[in-house]
Length: 307
Image (cartoon, rainbow, N blue to C red; front, side, top):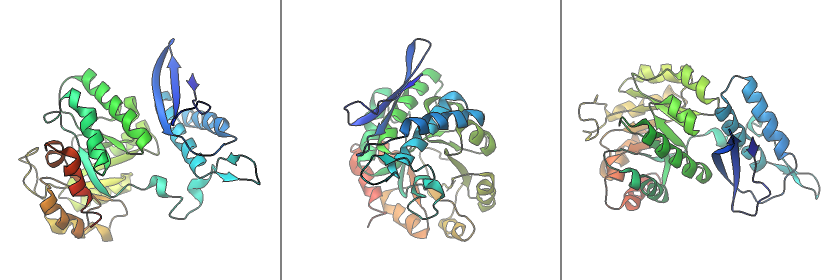
C-alpha cells in the first residue's frame, strides 16, 4: 500500500510504502506550490502501467512517482481552477520539456569507503552537494552487504528530494533495492540491457570506456546515458588503471550524443583542461572526499564549469 502525503502540511511530500504490516520505504519529493487535480489518478495508472511492462514493484513505484512529479511540475491551469498534470510533457519536443531527461554538467562526486566511515557518509555527501556536486556515485568495494544497503538507502533518500541523481557503482541489484537514480557499469559488470530492464526506462546508466572510443559508441547504441573515459592522470584510487589522453575528449563530440565523463587523478588544477577539451562532468573521489573541507573542495571543481 502506498499512502501519499500530498495533503500534509509539510515542506516535502512524503509518500509511504507499507507491506507485511510495516513501513517499507518513505519517498520524499519537493512540494510544488499549486493545487492539483488528477495527481492520484496519474500516479496509480503509472504504477499499473509499469508493472504491466514487467518492472519489479519497488522500481515501478519509484518510477511512477518520478513521472507523476514531473507531470505536476509541467502542469497547466484551465481558467481559475486547479492545475492539471501534463502527462505528455515529455513529448513536446523543446529543450525545456526535455530537461528532466538531461544529465547535469559539473562535478560528479564519488564516495569511497576507504575515505569515509559509515558515520561520516551522509554528512560528507551533503557537504559535497552544498559545494556544487551535481551527481553522486555510491562506490563501496567492501564485503558487508547490509552496511552497503543502508548507506545507499540513506543516500538515496537524501538525494532524491534535492533533485541530485544518485548512481550506484557496479551493483544493479542494489540500485534497484534502494531506488537510486541509476547505475555505473564497468568492464566486468552486468550489461546495459539487463540494467535497463531491471531499473526502468528513466534510469541513468553510465559505462566505463577507459580509453576506447569504440566502446563508447557501442555503449550509446546499447542505451547508455553517459560514458566515462580515464584515467587521465595518475590515480590514487586505481593506480594501475588504463591511461587516457586528453585528446580523447575532443573526439566523442562528433560521434556521440550522450555526455562524456572524465575520471582519474583529477584536481582543481588539471580539471580545467579536461572541461575545455570537452568533458561534461568531472568524476572525483579523493580530491573531494579526502579533503578536510569537503564543501570548499567541491566548490573549486564546480567553479571550473562556471568560470
